[in-house]
Image 1 (cartoon, rainbow, N blue to C red):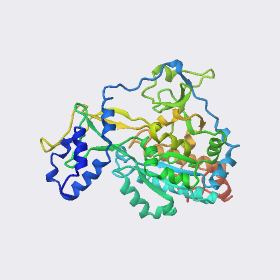
Image 2: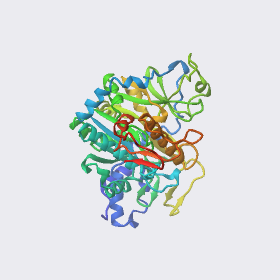
Image 3: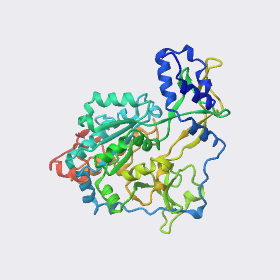
Image 4: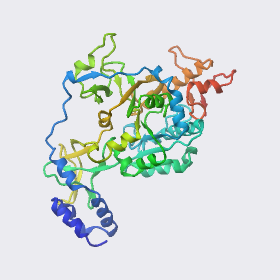
Length: 465
């Protein structure tokens, strides 16, 4: 390609973005072709409308009289509804979606976070752990569970190659569906002009975790799920190895209540814990970010002495597929949040990359929890932190590989003890030996108890796979 398409030239002129073509003549033909394709996907009118919101402040939290603690079903509520969930899994009505667009930068890991080795004994990666859960579900219920893997431009190629290298961890390749989170350009804060990463290349960044939902629709995967008869989509984040995928009691309760969005919650242990909280806002379910909650609200107590706002969000949800179709189409689509950021960018005038010291740009993100208030029917279900929440986010300290593995070992210890196995402990009650229970051996404590030999002994590191 040597010439700029006339229609694109007119669009850029109409929206005042001609600066993007300053070095057009110096670009190689393949770069010109890629740049034209990139620009063709930009909604310039939408960006102009977003730029008009540059001075709006972060939406203020509603007044206290409009906020109430959310009713949370106790964990035991899901026991009776387990058969409903199992029937849905056998009927092929459940799919699993893993959010895996992040890199392991905070872990000091220069690859997709899902590739991080976190198995306490085996060193299995997060990707392997979750893929094996999907395999175990498929085997248990005799129906191949679709496994949707959301990546980002930064992680997509490596993630797909990793799954191929490991033969999709035994899953049928045609049942593992990779799709990319959307991206959004950044705009110059003062002028509204699009920023460049390099000559002939826009500065693009992921459009937020809410982009998972819109990407489902935009890629056609949501329609594919509907065509296959999938009615419920289980959503989770890759960095939590303890999450029980599509736990049948949870799925069953979601179905029993006719819920459009269902969320598991872990109760906050201290008021200051940095976790978003599910609450009832203007009569609907919503999430209040920990940074937005006033100190006095974090300290509020219920009549029984527990924290009034304690329903912590571990990002474990079930969405009904018809609900997702509604919130990803037309006027119902999620709205972008506008944020001021420091964005390094290429400056054609000086032929160099500028690194700002102050906020110079607008970035735009969608938040998945903005979908929750759009639901007419919802539910929240308690899950125990020690059973289902071991986030991996930091290199050291809280939510680090050390704490993540400790929580995995402790759950394995409790499962083994419940199965009648004597687990040697140190003086603090911690297992003397690292323990690991792979999902292909047992998805839950009941399955473990049915498989473990009566004379099983632990005198060294143990991995059951």
